[in-house]
Image 1 (cartoon, one colour):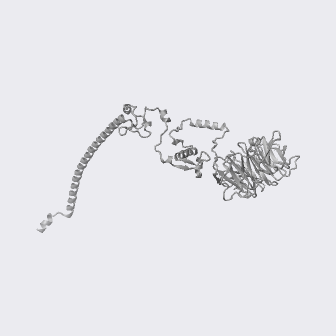
Image 2: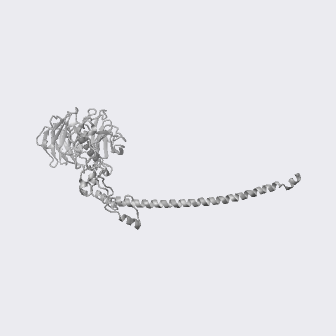
Image 3: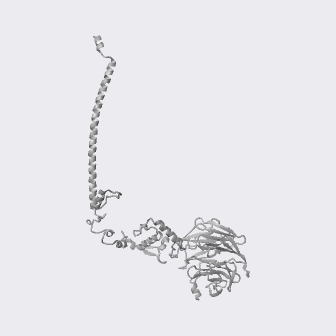
Length: 553
């Protein structure tokens, strides 16, 4: 029995081969079944995709129809700007009414028009009338009319005053003046104004710019409009800048400072025998050049008004002339026929033709600036101590030891009027105003009298104002370029320099500075347009100040 079973039983290899064959057959059947399922799934997906595409096309067509209807009813709100549009699109656009408005006003909800809505109505007013019609404010504050503001108490608000004695204004006036001040200080905000004209950026812009440049180069007029606002009394707005001679301070007292007519060049001369030139900008103040005169401690140095030369003098029988163009120093030899030991004080005529030196025994020496030769003399009864030319250089004023003011005609070399300076025993300083007919006369008693020259020549001896703010000898007086400020100074007392508001003849209360920075002032000058003020002192410093009322140096 056992043998029969063992003979008919299959071996192990045959069993394995049979299993592998059965497995292969099952795999083939499974693959065939899977392929049939994948094909069915792909067909279903294609069918769904086709339905979705049909739905999308239907939606797009419906959206186009809606847009077309909206464009027809409300205008081309949804039509973008395109180039090369097809004929169908052009036909669709042509169907839209050209007169249809982009926006319209719905008055069904409220019959009252809001602000500015009347400007949107078409056909009721012409475009010119709408443009010229003043715009109404969106909102007004009723409290503005009830509020009063004192603009005289705050320093920054003093510039809003229209009259010198104005103090309290209403709130609405305050707002309007602030707006006017902003417009005046910021003129380049035209883009913010609705009535401003747009700039034409055409292709001919470069040509027009070249024409404008050519027009500018053909004229010598000022390109910046001069500020005509009146200087108000009380407080002077100023700030101290870097010292003018910070790059090369003087080793002795400074006796002369003066600005060139271009307002950038400043000369500084003193007892250290060195004449220095600085380029003044208020920040760096670079030194340009210096000239050492071995035999002449400088008592006075002055530009000729035409800016070509500098006249330099000391306590010597001679003087120097420095040519700025050729950088050459010429010596003015002792004047023939004269025995003056010193030519340290002089004045130059406004036309740059004549130099008037103070001589001995009341003599005034007239020297030609071209030939450096003596061309005439004038003689006072007393000693001569101060000189001043009038605006055109045809007349000369002088004062001295007899307390009188002499008026000379330089064309005839004769004195045509002598007047007494009220309260003066010895005259020490004279100055005429660049604008108008004023002149100021200082004396050794510290009093400065301001006269109207026409009234003085007419016989009126009482001055317009007697300024008594100095208690020691007046060494110099100086008007600024528009005669709104008068500087008076004495070198005998520390910090003794006052600035006078000429229209009111009142001293600026905040000048001089309280820190006594001026030391002993010896000389000063205003820049040609009033923006800078330079002060020389006995310590060798040249203090530089900016006067904020003037926007040009």
